[in-house]
Image (cartoon, each protein chain N blue to C red):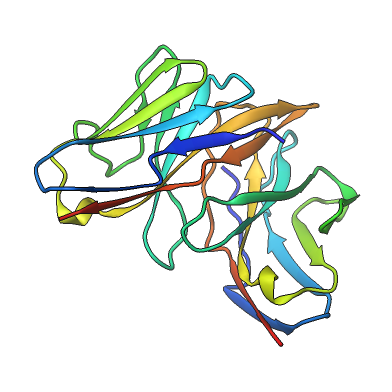
Length: 111
Length: 117
């Protein structure tokens, strides 16, 4: 099981770009990197998933270097509603493989 | 995207009683589902892996006789907290794996708050 390490917390201001980095040194060949957002009293919500290089969707970008041992979630122009906990997960290729959560990053956005 | 739904969203029960939480994959079949537990301001802790048609696999330290898991169909897994006690009060979350391309995407339910009084 690939272990992930993220900063415990980050602060930023509305309108800024926020980059959250995650390390996953023992990622396996068939593993994907997925980021989730969680608000209090809700289940984690899928943000973005990638295997390598760069992936972009309507809410975020995900940067993965060639060695895949780290990844960076980029949130453009954050707003107060982006205040949440963000989890980086390494998802195995097998649907039966369990996934262990790291600590996540508690992002606080200020006006 | 794929949807995973939990029911109930919150439940209050008396000590000593049992309570069941359902987890459904709404538009896909899930041979494997996972149950997590989360305490306030902490990360999700994996409790068990629910396998359709076979016994669940529990993580170390999780009592299988207390947290009964049944995965009777490809779209439904249930978690029953038996003889509940106040220390079982927590936020319970399920997840299911949705195959996409060469990999899988994990989708989570909305979570279920259990309060034991």
